[in-house]
Length: 452
Image 1: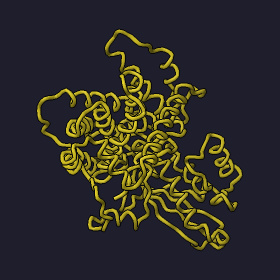
Image 2: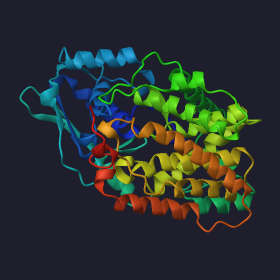
Image 3: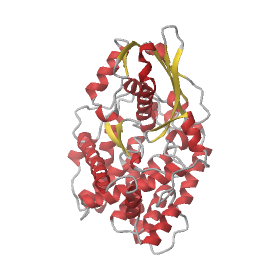
Image 4: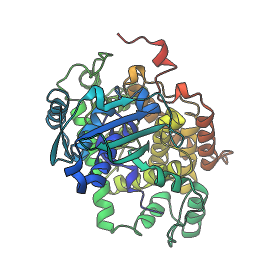
């Protein structure tokens, strides 16, 4: 058992599993080899499975170079990113771990294998070689979604359900346990999440973390609506829409006009992610705009969404997100887009309901409904880019979350489907899904829409 803070991370786009994950793998490998730098003359990077098939479009190759250079996501900006890539690709040098320059040949040292490793769809191996080509050190890493990276031993240990964990006063692994605790203590989901986090952090740390995440989300939205680049990077040559949309929409007597604002919030943030900029994984980069779009809706179009409600919202969302991470998946490569947009929409729905005063049962029902109507959603990024259909899917995920929260809060009947049941169903559906529809760009829109 551990804190759920890692559900939200300040990272780099366009993908938490395919960009942030490889970058963190590079950071981890640097930590592993830091005391043997004098022996190392070459690094070989091999991508497998989904990381190989859509890696270039997701900037996986560039991200691992940033990581091997000792750069961290929180410190990145466009200039730092471009400088390190220019040095690697044009000058053929990597400053390994930020300390030692070694020769780098992209065509030789970056390998895109068609093989899938057995433990997870997103695998990559890093090898450090000496001057004779001998292996100084190597490690295989798995990017399991949401920017979480494990080596083979750690992933096998995670899969071992008999692994011993620290016994805590409050343990909550699923919605059933959450509802029992809430009933026993007369808590809502936010209060449960807060008391759970107090086992790892102080009140000041919890509030500080939530407010920092919210500040970055708002910063990303602002940048997305004031971008100077007209087009997103990549072969699609997709025009950015948020800036123009912000200028065109206005308050209206049309009751459905609010959808335009929700779409604006989501599109602006998703476009920033697609550009490779700094975003908050929530719980992934591909779904990073769903939760902040719902929060911006609450901030700008409802009454009473203050700093305290921000904390309630994010605490609830991270708790629900932990249920998906522990019992299913938040990786599009493992379970399709339902695991990313669906999880984010579910988190946002339960969090919105809680922030508006719903009890734990209604909040879990909101979360369940949001996921129920994302079941079977495929991950088929055109050109391997997090642009089509990903950007618009964030907007629809936010709209579904708001609808689910409102439905749950106004219903009088007892729900037939529980949150744990829909999480289990999502995971089983993802495992049954053809691999072509799980972030490989080999099926769906990625196959039928030609890239010019």
